[in-house]
Image (cartoon, helix red, strand yellow):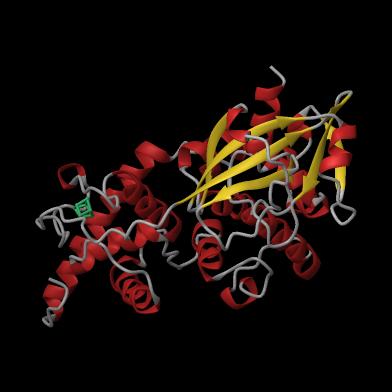
Length: 360
Ligand code: SF4
């Protein structure tokens, strides 16, 4: 359909494609216009929502986005805040590296452009924490300028529609192909509305694991519509490791003892209860010091969590400050007492849980 050379045919096909994508925009508008980051939008709020949405589901971001913006209503408020406060406000969204990137970007926008978010790609990618994808999203979604932000959802939908490829690999070639298609057929549409509609479709009807073509506004001309569902090209599953950590809970008045995770460590910038490695299938893991006691930690209260490829069993050991000093104290490790009102303390989720289980 897209390789025809007759000018009249190409023009007609182009009109059909644009018409079909207009229906996609209507479909998206009627279902998702009320997402909080699509109401009262600014380029700053787009910066916040884009970073939140990059590795977190829409349902989770809905619960955090408005609160975050109430706390940091302008880019200047965000730039002025401490990293620790931002990590606390980010709690529940996971992947805290994004919170630090957002903070760095806000500071850089304030320093370089007095808090304005520019429209030019080459200026945007110069900002700390802004890669090519986020820059394109700021242009298309934030400023509604002609641009295509190709995340996994956009790549999948357009590849299926344009080339009949069910499970595309995102690389520079694919981005260029999709951008040419966008320029050839779709540049007359609002790029903001188009990007968001493609993301909506890729999240709901045209996902990595299913395609509900009967309900899809693009079904008339989509090249993947008649393909059998073959989602066997999924990523090979990642090797998983089991890990046993002992979380040491030391309480003094209304304070608990914590350690701040530092650069290069898991949960960088957050606080944790002092934690020790009791067992690991991954012999190379160097995230925690070894558990120094002989006692059978497996009889203590326990709960499960996970980080990337690690399945973690967290065992809780409670002791006094005096015992802690005798058994675990190391001069090189900086300890801090923090308020037990944990939501104010930038404490990791596992440490909050350990502290609440043990204090019941
Ligand atoms: S018709 Fe099917 S494969 Fe094509 S975009 Fe819609 S849901 Fe995806």
